[in-house]
Image (cartoon, rainbow, N blue to C red):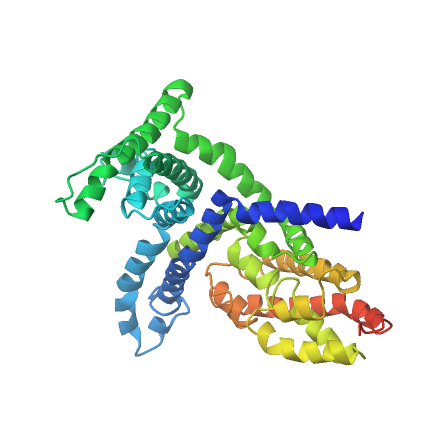
Length: 434
């Protein structure tokens, strides 16, 4: 039964990891991560360094440092150019990743995919005039279509446009052949002309027909019936804990659970983070508890399974020389949230004595952090720090300089250690593998 379960898990995980669309989404978000980090840190700098609001705790309000307030437009501009164009970056990167799968590296492909996505967006927006009345602004693209709210439609349109484009190009049936005297780049432009034309027109046609038949735009339909329900599930506490359990269960079987499930949860948690970041920048109430940095700070810090707690438990209570030797090697890795030496060195993989607390510890930590955030002791996450940021400092930065978040993360490490201790004591009675 164990073998059947493991083979089944391996088959499902392997299929998810190699599935071309999920792989393209996962790789696209990995490439997009530096832009997200830049944008969120610009928001942090704008608030912590440049905010001149009276009574606000920032460097600009320190006597003699008011000149720092002049830097705010620079950080705001950089933030707008990054966080408010996540959907655009996603469309470009997903199309490039999926195009590489088909062997298509045309520079025109991401442009075609972006044009296809824009064709599904509205070109008008409502605004308020000076007298307070609402006015309709034409020939504009609202940021709803360019920021994290457009991620799901952007991913779907990029995948659809790339599939159509690549199949048409690889078929060779629509290629326009130019004389040999024509430069290669010009000839290539003509050879992909009809595939590009058909792709953009077909995506625009699908959007137009859908709106005519249903009375709802395709963008709004995907947002309402796919993105919002998934967001409600994964950003709810039960849904999030289930996600963490699945991730650690895959790790237990030797599968990189984070990478397998990343394509599913990353767009949802990233959109939730973008909402928080925008609210923080605007100085309004932070809406979401669970998002991308919440996972980093309270479910995967020191590595999946919060194995930093296991290291502490081993160094304090283990009598096994092999465990203690590996734990000592794992200390510098855990400081930067890397735990492969622990997972495969002890091992945790297929080891029920350590596998059980490995799955329990993140759930306990997330539960405590959720409660502390809900009561206001721990600040809500508004900055997406690099995943290698050391614990405590990581939570402090991600919560916008909130000390309560740093304390909460430290307590979570203590709780994880307490979860691991009984199992480390039980492992003392096991004979080391020769």
